Length: 86
Image (cartoon, rainbow, N blue to C red):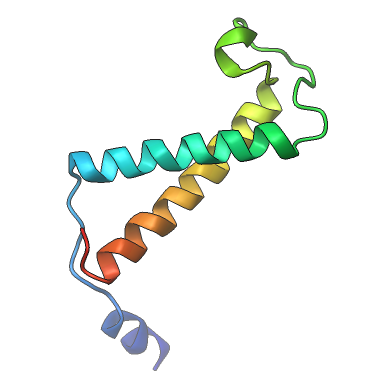
């Protein structure tokens, strides 16, 4: 019973477009800005080779904010696709 319900909820596939890319980039920027103000110790070791490019973040902070940005971006993209905006 569960697989048939799950298959009934599937929508049309979403093709990649520049709009999708821009939404993902903006979501990552928002996540990095959020992390900049909320991470208690952003420069924990191991450090990155050019820390100035990454806002002084260490490797754990970069991985955490980019992972959060992708999760946020997927949610925004799928939500906008579901309501028919993209």
